[in-house]
Image 1 (cartoon, helix red, strand yellow):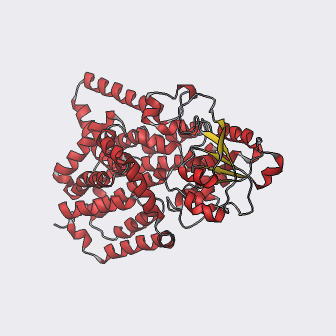
Image 2: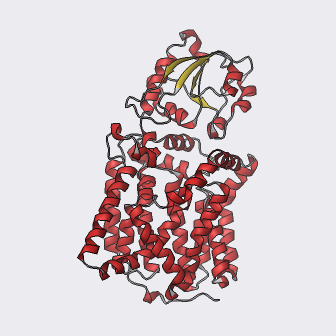
Image 3: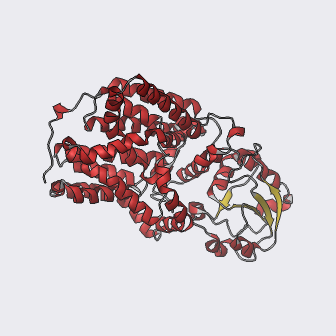
Length: 500
């Protein structure tokens, strides 16, 4: 089967003004709320990594840390300044989904509906509010989807160059984009049009992707592919839970209200004769889900493909509404409003901190992880004062995870704390402490066997309280004072390292 070429003039006009209006409102709301609560643990880690630029890190490629550094340099070392990048990623995704709806023949109303549904969906709100690798990943998956649709609709194989460039940039942010490429490739081989592969442009696009990936690929090779070690650890620890929750979470990540829309989009892409050229996108979503289930990937990894299906489903959803009476339209508006409110409450920091309990944290744990980092630093600073003054110059501040280390690096200097060290993720590469640091060790976190074996006598001297009684990961964190090791730091450091 050959690709079905559709003249560009047959596409509806892009609904620039209504889509731009959605994006502007989205940016305004996200910006207004970006300073509430505080940094997320991952954001603190990205800032720390961005201050130590490299071609790669043990758990991620370089783009998100570099964006964190650029944002804090340009807009300020605050949650609001950092999150400019996430806000722009969210707005870009909204516009891209509207363009995807246009590729499927969606008119002005369908494009506007696709943009509004995207901007108000739960997952998009979460990753547009705080900076994460998923913020950029969502944009790149959607962009690759749009470019792939252009390739299939027009039959112009030069689009492979753009797809390769987007894939290369996406892989410099997160290797998860390779799942999308594999799923689309398998789907195209299964449903066609297979002729799009029979071109030198395909090879050229792949070459562009590989060239863009080379710097961090060489970094991973030189360091023994630590990202695979991290991924293996995540799968071993959370794989069973991820598999059990995978299907249920697909129904709630965007919004339960939007499930009929994206399901209608999947059915439309599979059945509609006029969209037979895009049939592979209907198959790519279940293929990606199956791949992620096999490796124990997190349920939200496949969500960007749901945005493609959502764009395909807006047109039939609007036709269904227009064919119904006032009761149907009224009920649909009520459901849409309820879904939007739920998404905003779960995805954005609109509630008082004290109200972040129960269902909110159950659906979005990341809300709670933005609370209490200055309080942790204050607790550690008080514990640091328990060390005799004549021993502090050679004492070491050590943490059990990168969130704690990032918080102490960000808030500690103003409280008189020294540089923190950590044996977790890339922080382990930024250590060890100098061997001249032979004093006591103030350890923040759970006393794992390796820590106890290295330092022997450890006494708990403080317990962290975030001040809000919020049950997040650092509430109740112990701070322990440990006696020095009998071995130099350079010798014990490899034994302390943890990847997950």
